[in-house]
Image (cartoon, rainbow, N blue to C red):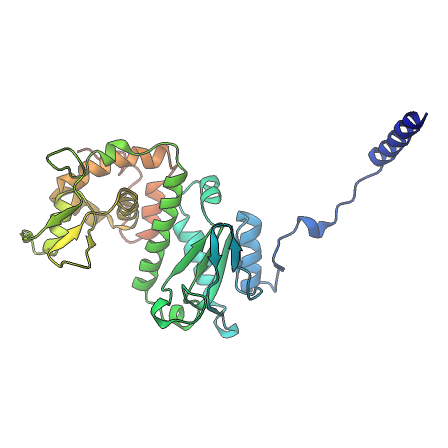
Length: 319
């Protein structure tokens, strides 16, 4: 009898529940971290709208230990100073350069699945639990689903266009590496064109002396690396006459940056003077378009509006 009574009560309860409209607290479906819409045209409104469209948080007002964590992987306790109220307008530039620059031409779903959910913004940041001038962070630190951007203040207020370009290039390389790590397929045709030793293993460095650029456009360092199909080298700290070849992930990021931030004039020049770079570009472009869903033309046009490539430029490249 007890079981029957329990079943009757459950049926009665479910019947009542299903017959009534369920009212959900709208605040439960809203953003976390206390985001508010803000005044029209304000930075807070831009941050809120970005969350609504992308599900990404840009946080400059947060609790002192919001990104300080202690878990099984260790400690992540960093010294920082918050963004000053008089410097909050620079946040608008940050969001514009990331959302309207770095993300342009990329598949939105891929970006949302690869980029950080939370972006913390700080004036100064140290890669240490206490202030240490030798460990001041120039651009960012990352930890799990969050990235902490440094310099959001007087430093960025004094950025030149070249400074912003360098800043975007660094974050673009980070995004590309995260996209690449999340991909199920590697650009084997591209990597197979890296320099090889006599034993078939990949070369790791190029020793001096390096030949001079006949045109005098590039330094011997840059000229020898581009002649061998690399965008740039990685200097070593122990020997100035030796330069390292970048690893595969950096190599791929360098090419993406080169293809999407270089003017058409410079692209044409490099592909004409350095056949190996043309060969590697032709090898990697299908991968970028098919696997990483990149619109290379849109990305290059956004970065080089004064000297854009035409719609079929990358499609028509041949080695």
